[in-house]
Image 1 (cartoon, helix red, strand yellow):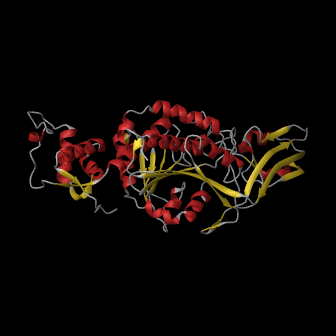
Image 2: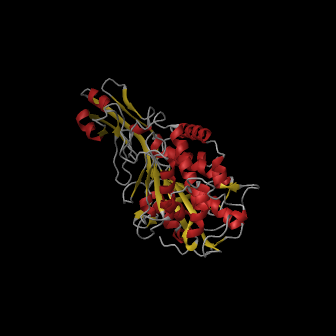
Image 3: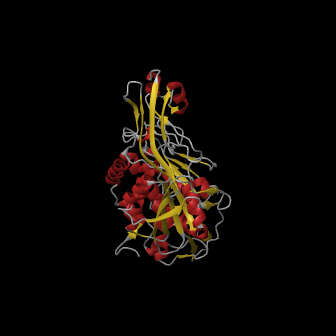
Length: 449
């Protein structure tokens, strides 16, 4: 189950080359960027196939028309080519140049029409005239093209030839998952959406960080079982939850990963519960990391955490981003390209995830076996004492905090938060105290979320 000579995740994190991982994630994004992804179809499957080269993904196909709670799995969309020819016969918009040029799920079109008739089906960004917007119409049959506003304003009057060689047919929705067993059946869910076409930050960054995180965890001794799910946004998690409702009781922690490669500072959105262990772990890691960051409360808008946190499930799933959705000019347009994606930001996002999982893996409830006054630590060789020092170091102070709050009601992560000491130091203190018989791990968790 666990590789021979594997170590705890905190040990792996300490020796991990995050810069190399950042370069690998950017290289993966470069490979995936040209693929025309959508919520169904060949582009989604090709993306999952490539992700499966690093981890043995189990692919599930859910037929079109399948009822999933209040939704229905849509028809499968296939696109082969799309273009607009101007009055002089030259192509003024061409899907082969950018797959953002076609509105997602466009129905087939083969027609000639004047510019006045074509214009309602052309989408641009007047406030960003050189960028191509990302648009889709998944659940209402429609067609359209996206182009820069500068190009749109340059189009002359006259007759245009329009061609969208696409197909909407009964097929299936595809999602991939990888289960990485741990010592316990309780699970940590990691989710990333895999459906956006040629958007590097809003799609590929989450896939890259999740893939690297899976590779890292594969090398670790694991307490929890980890379930990685790659699926199209909205309909993907809804479909997964509908088919796996019986498994959701095992999910103890979860993260949705998105927008992790831009140069902005980290943003963590709490789960609907607001005080779940993953919420505390992320807040602790970001506070100790230094530098600007945001921890914000849950709202039912954003990424797919809102499906996992819907009231019928209320799973402890938060969302890690850098610049939040809709807050940066490159959001959902051609500015979200490979240059916008920073290897250093991907690496930093991976580090934050790994450190938060280290907190979850290392957390626990302990009981002080000598609770009446402080035990003598010096005679046990684990305490240096004051010896004229004006202040205790974090390691020695951590011993006192762990002893005082190990009453069977406070976990190590809560002790770290109260003490203002890094979780790693608190965990080391607990290991030392357990090793000399002063602490015993409790099998009962009396904490209330």
